[in-house]
Image (cartoon, rainbow, N blue to C red; front, side, top):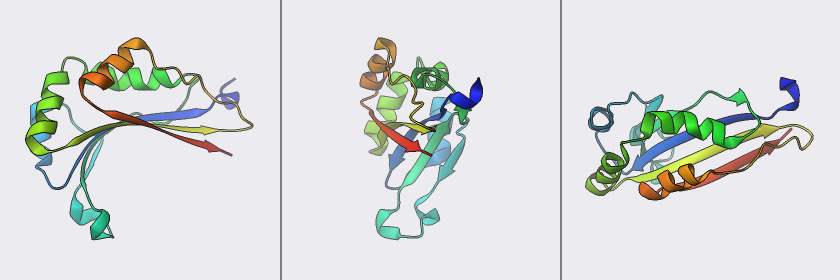
Length: 132
């Protein structure tokens, strides 16, 4: 029953001071789900430019299922991501957002393949857990 499952969304972000978002899109040959420039932030001291690739928030039992959706688009582009990070001084970040009720949390397992990819692009991964 879906209502007993948490809602999970995964995201991959390339974050930097100020960079050409179109250049990143062309190099990766992936359209981002959204982008944000430094000028879009209300507080300039915290502003960054961000290229985002996110999954839809869905009822899901395991975080790895949502991460795999991102990796299906990103696999084979590890070298390009690393080159972009080095060339444009970007940080690669994965995030997992989990909304759950009554402690019905998901499996928080990262497969060896996921860990390998995250390491290959020198990314960090963060988990945001929200309990309603």
